[in-house]
Length: 124
Image (cartoon, rainbow, N blue to C red; front, top):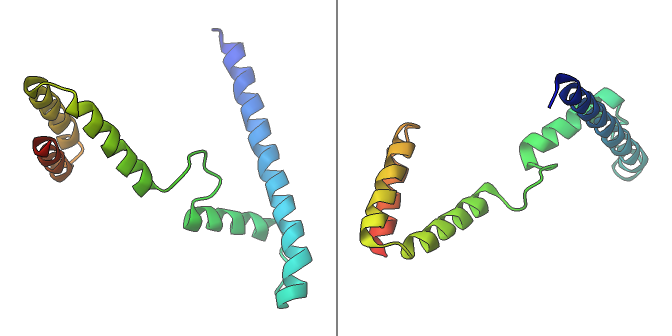
């Protein structure tokens, strides 16, 4: 692929991302200014305040994401998938897998998780 192809894709992505932010901000501002002052006697928001509110809600509640479920659910599903895969391995393959995972996790400072994974694998 050449540079112009990727440059066009990047420009298109930036354009649509900015368009999405503007539309989401406008819709949120319109809904807020329509409902909150009437129902709760709250203040009307400017566009900048609306964008700040969207960012704050993203930080606090984790909206706008592609994935479904919380991190805890995803982690639990991942552990179940790994446990299912490991249960089909021979004892030698299981030990080899455990050692590989321990090496990978140790480099990130997660020796406790590698240890707990080893215990989970040994229980099976």
